[in-house]
Length: 323
Image (cartoon, rainbow, N blue to C red):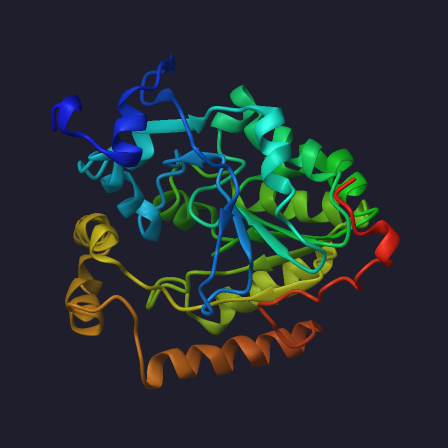
């Protein structure tokens, strides 16, 4: 452990937070934060702003790419990402001031690093608090990604938000096999509960989709598995379906490879040959998966996949102010 006097940046802020609650497996902490709304300038992603109300994620997905974010807080034990959860301090006045930088046509993505509807949300309501104030925006797109059926709780807020903005909710469902899902995503809601949330959101008129990302080689990449998720999504009223191949940052490999060795030892060597010292796969395999997903999407009756949502038309000049 690094001495607090030596910490800087987010690590110092995390160390100054308070313990909010301690359960048998998980500790919840407050996180002083300079900004809730983070500007994104990367051309590799289709949004302008990101919001992540929490740091760390209790779902414990074995393949999670975001584990490295805890290293910024000098929390380097692999398990800390899912057992030391930080809820960002909330101040409505400060958040409203940040929102004045958002312009019509901008895209705000919620849940790009950690799940905004993980169990901490039931206790601390950080995501709902943000949604309540986002309702004051006009002419923007808000995209939410989650593995949790808890998102359906906020249907009233999402409906209100959609009155003047484009709202997109995407639930991640890698497989409908409950036993496999429990191994891969041990503390996430069951796949059937997530599909029920898709149906509730769709019935409320919220544009809702399903992604089967990441597609795990030899585990969830079969035509049968992906087609079953796409068909269930369509029956639930989903607006779109997509999937992308697993990428394994070193922080994820340190968790995922031992998991494979314990649960699926027959695949360890194949994964080591596939990924080795790289995080992203290239070549024939990802091309095969893209073609498979495109075929399944078409068969299920979904439109062509486009990661960037349809932007809302800019409102008249008289309506382009924040409120």
